[in-house]
Image 1 (cartoon, helix red, strand yellow):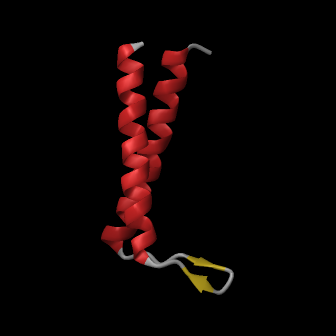
Image 2 (image 1 turned 180 degrees about the vertical axis):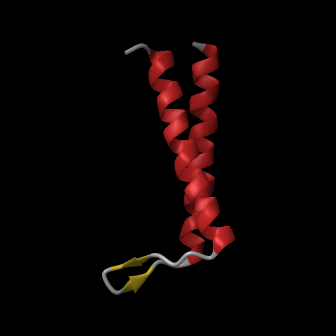
Length: 64
């Protein structure tokens, strides 16, 4: 697997994760793990981190 292919796949996966976090925020979906309800701020952090990693992966894929 080349660096460009890896960066493209990683960027796509992180973009999907960012999209799911955004959908959770917009739609107001609740996430319950065991009996703990995950607060919405966790999705804000996840959105920023996943979107940033997707952006970096896309830039790396274009440069390679």
